[in-house]
Length: 346
Picture 1 (spheres, rainbow, N blue to C red):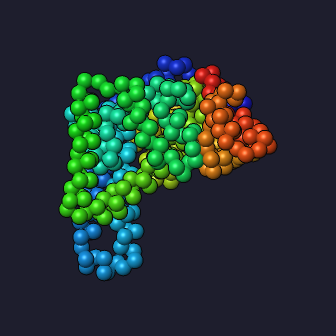
Picture 2: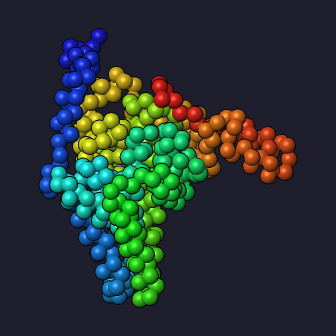
Picture 3: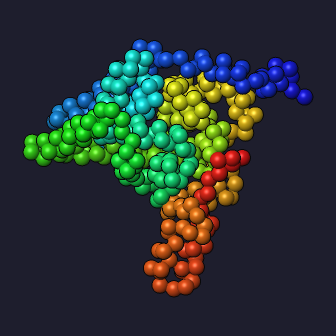
């Protein structure tokens, strides 16, 4: 039998839990951890570029020189990934203008567009695991996990195809993309493309894979639930909490998007009895069952998922295969791996 404190805590009313979570919904402080991430990211990026031009440093470090600089640049962009994410939810800074500045600044360093990231990400929150309306669902389920980074370009297409911009956001997109193009043209003209390739594009690709796996793929797999208590997951870990800045508590973010990243863990610990009661997934869920393991292996190798068993858009590719046997196997594979999310999935 449950002891009285635990029993009462587990079955408190929803109003009680709203009061509990309110503590974490307050605007962050002026010099909160996200501000230091933002400044630290630029400091690290500047350090990597400065070190690139120090011949004495390359001689002293030898073969470790380039990997070290790439690692510093990767860390800088990885930090800015959390900044742009919190800024799009207005959780990076209590001042809306500083919040916008941090969002645009992080986007420029990442090679993103802040209005595109913001509008597309908010669509993801509104339509989690909806094959037609969740842009991140396409990113996660239309190819192997290791090629997830290039699929982020779909966000830009989604932004324009759905006409998601508001007020001055189209102009902001134009300015940020113009700045990106100007940097590339300057790199060609003034011969610093090696810096761009090694300390920007390369680390950005690595960060794209990291963000794709830990922000999109792992938190939402197996991509079947649309119920708000189950459409993302938690996998508690002190180490992962540091390495991916709280994204292992992703369900907390979906339930209360204005909570800043550094409050995910304490908010989870405070509301765990509620999540237990709702049946929210609280494990990584990759190798818990044979089906989990096989699905993960499929996503690593091929990862293309259809969303209709009998009228899949991937079905016509069967005609390109040379034999009936191979065509039948392709169709069976589509049937087996099809994802049909359910809003009330339990």
